Length: 388
Image (cartoon, rainbow, N blue to C red; front, side):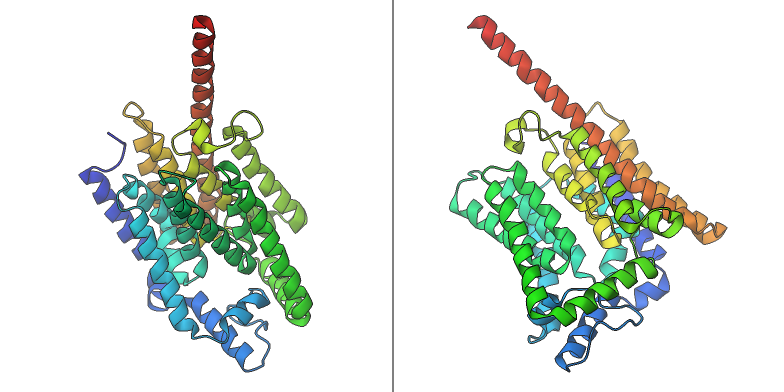
């Protein structure tokens, strides 16, 4: 019996979902999808020949490729089709999975999932689509089949497309490093993104300059630098440059990943080690590499961490059930402190601690499983040598 899936677990999930909706407040609930409105406004401005990169309420901080791709088509219907297709494919791909409750609980933790959806930002739906595609690919009986190749090509296409719009999506190419015959896509995705960037610099130099200027203003001047370590350093510490803060953040995330997986020693492919929860841990790592994580990034990150821990759990480890319950409750407690105690930094601290605590717990589990698998392999090899 896995640590989640009983009736009271589903009741707890429903409670977290309802509280996530409640904590958003009337302002967000009755005026949602503000990021989508930014997209629509910028496309309208671009179509009229005006400069879409002018600072206003919620500035448009996406590269010129977004404008050139979507300005001449009915964006409203395209965006609606993209959202529906992503959610339908996600539901289809996990229809037989046993980790749905765990993934949903992670997605809703801290209100991140509901908050991310209410923004209308395409990123949360793009994350879910890529995660669903990678999970579906991992279920292929024959990784060498035409269907598996087509799915890998689709993954590489979507990752490159999304990364050309939001560069941090390029980190999903790391997953290809750990799957059979994935190296071609591991190199192809960054190459495609680099060519798209060069094309924008060459064909739209003025728009690109305006984009860079507005992005720098939004992140550094307006302190829109995310909810995790990089944001904390930029908004509250300000002792180092943005580059140095970013390097510190990446060093912490990569150190935890190498501690858990250590891809430079032993077997690299997930199929070779067969460690439970490895795929979703690597997906969580790809998400965590984004130093400017917002709610629409944190929700799928928590979901991947929860699924990874769920898949690697056993009947004897009751602490996993405590973990699944304690983390959402800790975020609820932090919200109560902010709401009624007016200690406004409590929520910032809870995001900062929560993300790294969850990632550390899952990293420690993956390391323990990897060490146990290697020890078992050495024991089998020793027995084989002795009998041989």
